[in-house]
Length: 221
Image 1 (cartoon, rainbow, N blue to C red):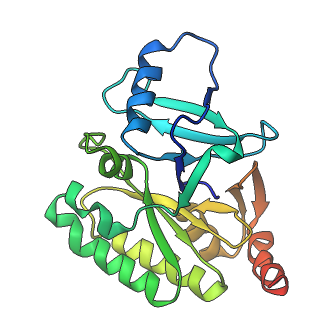
Image 2 (tube, rainbow, N blue to C red):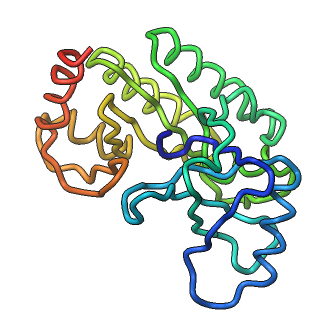
């Protein structure tokens, strides 16, 4: 299970909310969400040993984001983030061709692209989450330097074709992820520190360290 993965729970699974204030309305909304067979999303792990950190962004609720914890045995299945083609029904036609081109080119080199954020929540819930200034959030998983370079190039090119801002992360094999725009800027100059979002922590790392991790990952296979 990695950040942004879709996590489906067993019926009746015990869930803890990471809040101290009363939350009757959101808790009822959470119960309705789970009874409909909808997933939660994997969050950054590690703050609560023996528990899995999950999240939910509720539609039409003043407390929109819930931080949750479950025991590992509460999980029925884990699936990767939605594919771009899974999300076309929630996007205007002007988005379709650029996103299909992006997905095709990234998959063409063996990398994977998934959708998270407001677009994904709309698909999962069939409720509105987006507004006129909403971004599209993508997670691109790469396994080598060639895929990384291709992802940077494709994201930069397609970003100029979309009617909205294209945001998201590129994630390398060890689970570290970086905002693709920050990564593109650092890669162009071959220098700089990057804000790296790991599976368990957030840290600043030099670009060189990020690139070196590819050879480490290869040696572990």
